[in-house]
Amino acid sequence: GARENTQKHIAVFAFPFTTHAAPLLALVQKLSESAADSKFHFFNTAQSNESLFSKDHDCERVKPWSVDTGLPKGYKSTKGPSNEPLEYFLKATPGNFETAVAETGLPFDGIISDAFLWFAKEMAEEMRVPWIPYFTAGPRALLVHVVADDLRARLGMNGPKDQTLEFLPGFSAIRAVDIPEGIISGSFDSPFQMMMCKMGQMLPHASAVAINSFEEIDPIVVKTLKSRISNLLNIGPFVLRTPSTSDSDIHGCLDWLDQHMRSSVAYISFGSSATPSPNELKALAEGLEASKFPFLWSFKGNAQEMLPRGFLKRTKNRGMIVPWAPQLIVLGHPSVGVFVTHCGWNSVSESIIGGVPMICRPFFAEQKLNQKTVEAVWGFGVGVEGGMFTKNGTIKALQVILSSEEGKLMKEKIGILQELAFNALDTDGSSTVNFNSLVDLVSRC
Ligand code: UDP
Image (cartoon, rainbow, N blue to C red; front, side):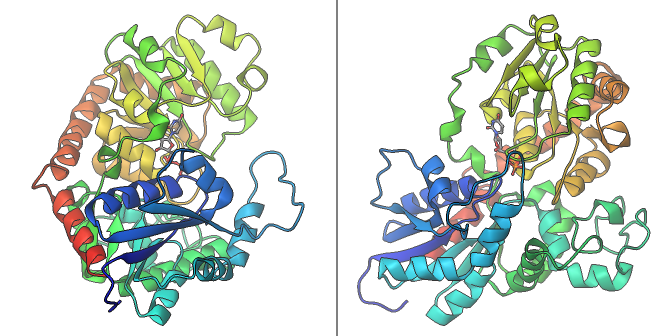
């Protein structure tokens, strides 16, 4: 924007589902400290904003602003996981964001958006300002969306699940079945898949694309990505830059971990929205119990009701179940030896930061791709046998990582990437350099 006034306004569009809005806000907070002339409006649903912004948040630099959820009046959420809120929200876009932007009465000088919200590109064009999307997952997930048309042309739709993607550099171990649904399998016409498809087409036309990853994590893939997206800024793992509010340890996980031996504990969490079926929960619990390894489980819901009868009592001396754990710190604790995870990108990054090998049970989106990368490309994790928890599969996976030579090797391998992650964030590290470019770009909006 070519206005005389030095005060700039940047609109930020958040995606209010799974763990997307929190990393975006962390980025914006950090930007607001560095791009001192810029003021940010954080457009997000009221509910998500409420959970992100503390009551005493100073709105001077980053101001939360509500966007309509699109839910019908009086809508009552169903019990358990449901796609309905997402679908209503997507139906309401981009109108809900346009309305919210108009409400501020401000002219904006730039838009930073969750990469999913591709329509921000068109809004930015209309306003004649830069669009800077933030992709909150990893480089492989980004690449498969950007080259989605090529993948479809090569592999067709719903072809053999086991064919590998040799033609894509760095993907020879990845199979068709590992690619997120909606690209070469499943349905394309759901509002979510259509959004992802548009995102893949729009991102190469952004002023810059920021990604919560670092260049050294997957150099071949990052190189291919850069040939498609000229201004790709790997600025992560961003969590290392911003202590998060969810880090407080109200349930005493760290004290509990202090009482255990080095690399002996299994930490279990499936992120903000994935939940294994009752049968799998039961199998996982049985496996944990029979394996005799200590465990710390971040558990959504009522553990007493959902886990096998007597399980809590029988395992109380070596198991701890909490509704929420300070995950980043937990994974950095020396007692934790393995992370049983759904392979959400934040979880995978935090496991790398902690140097903890993984047992992977992916559910949706790019989680399977993350698993395959952990397992077959980086070699510091295993999938559960058959893709679902069984008692024996759980025991086996725990033993491999916690008490075998192979597990020791995995620990060494993840240690190498852990070091690279920290290096990337050093004063002259790649992610720091990229973050400074991003600050420049925002300052020049
Ligand atoms: N998380 C946490 N404590 C918990 C469970 C999860 O702090 O008990 C955090 C975790 O550190 C991560 C995020 O929630 O940053 C989960 O993000 P991820 O991308 O792994 O999964 P999603 O929630 O998007 O499925």
